[in-house]
Image 1: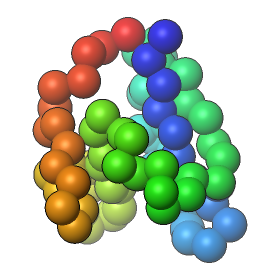
Image 2: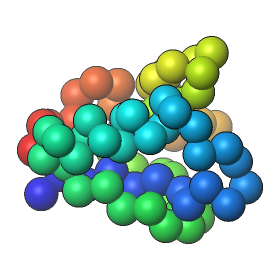
Image 3: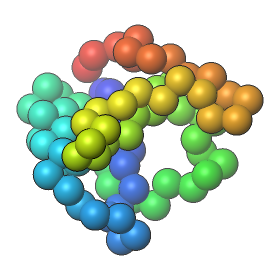
Image 4: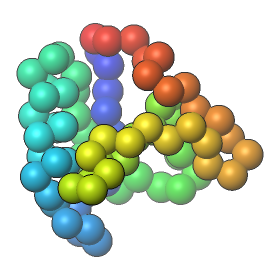
Length: 76
């Protein structure tokens, strides 16, 4: 099963865009896990994206020296 891990919204706004992405992901068969995501876990991720009102859904290509796939993760 394809998983999406997202931080619990305890230090940021649980906005409409975020909620919509979670709802759509679940409808498409992804399991969405809301939990504390630690910085050292990021390098183990296949793909990362950010959500926000102005940013909408924005793929992350790289953080520091780690590159991520953009739009290539398999659908569930």
